[in-house]
Image (cartoon, rainbow over all chains, first blue to last red; front, side, top):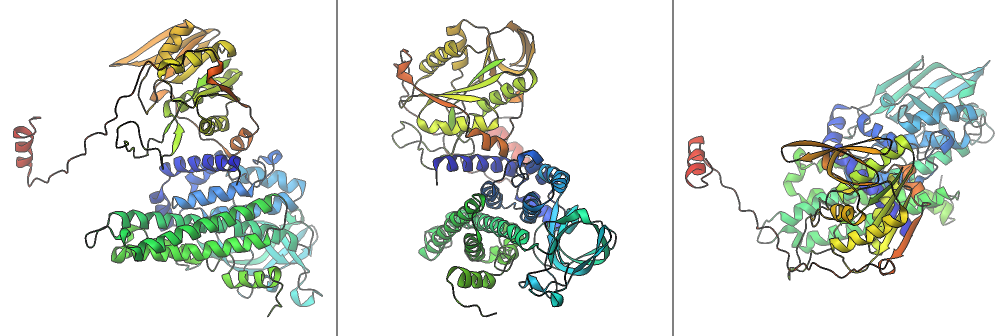
Length: 385
Length: 248
């Protein structure tokens, strides 16, 4: 990495350090426990230009840089205050900036960049999780509108967003000659008539809840179609790589936060005569965790750089997400072990990290699907499905 | 208005400082370096003045190549350009003031704003020395700075109250804690900082006597804090405070 990159990274680091002094882990936990959005933190991120990291300058953005956004996310994670909404919001910004009409860019990017309006992303359905092509939500043309019917699940942050990007079919899967045909991307307001959202019982301690959505004859103006009708695949994948990269950054951050707690505890806690951190049974796993976190971090930066340079970031984005997901879960598990029985107490704030860290192995894409991707697209192995 | 802001690199106030075993300095491994917080306030004030009246904010630091990092931070906050006077040796306050006076003569700022002191050695001398060398008026410990044409009014924090002084530019102002709350470097600021000018000048090219007049003989860490002790009742507390601590 260049010295220039290091110096920018250290500037983002100091920004987050000061931000985290004001909006600390206690603030984050308070929001997580009461299901409140991280509004105050979000406003500061907007004011400092970070929410506009994926929007061009002429639309109120800061110039496009996923690399810097990933560093920001990682740093927020380091302090235990990562906003998941940033991961999904990025997808909205990327899809609109890359594939939106001039009108959409002017309408949606400036408020997204200053933090006054937020985006969530709705793709997953009860019968279409890892296999996105099976989605059944259908938008049919009706004059100057589309009319959307269907159902979505596990959609994060719906209650905290003004808009959502919805992936829906404009040609039903069984009528399409090719399953990749007929996928379209729409901007839908979260308060659109006919749209209902129910909070799901996901047990993950974080400020953003997951929602089940029902679209019942929801009218969408044609002007809200992003990209070409039926050809949203490109836009979708353009948005999915940044999601994986920012999620990876979040995983690295959570891992670092957990490890810093474990190290702090192991340095002072004495069971026999020496602090427990002197025992190699704990010191070595912590050293390994540190190494793996830094490897995942480098891979994440690499993925973001390739994306920023306009290259195909698929391989690196998937590998970064895999590495970060595995190491986040392993490191939090280790941090719990280091804390012994007290690791299960709310006040030590370690067990509280577990659901979120463990989620990184499952979402936004499961590690199995990542490994399938690497097997098929990177190694050239035949596919099984 | 052209504003010159001298900046010093200091250990992060949140860092735990360890004195080297021989007392010659502090251990610098694992120390995070930042802009002296009072200088950060000076940069913020300069930026606010520029935003109101237009002009240019120029940063200057005297130090090693690593000090670039702090200058870049100031550029990311919004300063226009920076000058690093390169000196590998640590200099004393007099030498620093002499170098800054040279830079001021060359840059001809309308005002120089700097921290009232650096949080590492707490010398509180450079601003005053600089005013003397340039023959400019000075207002130290500023908590409010206002302008009317070429006149500047400063509210100073003095023992037990406030003092308001007025003077003509050019002048020196040193900042106190309550002057403002410095901004963070924004993402656009960080991205623009890369393209801004950061010029390096060797300290020995300025024709200034850099011989130290001051030598740090020894640093001592503060005494270790003794563990506290629990008392059983208010009565006992009063007893102990009166008889042992003799504070009441």
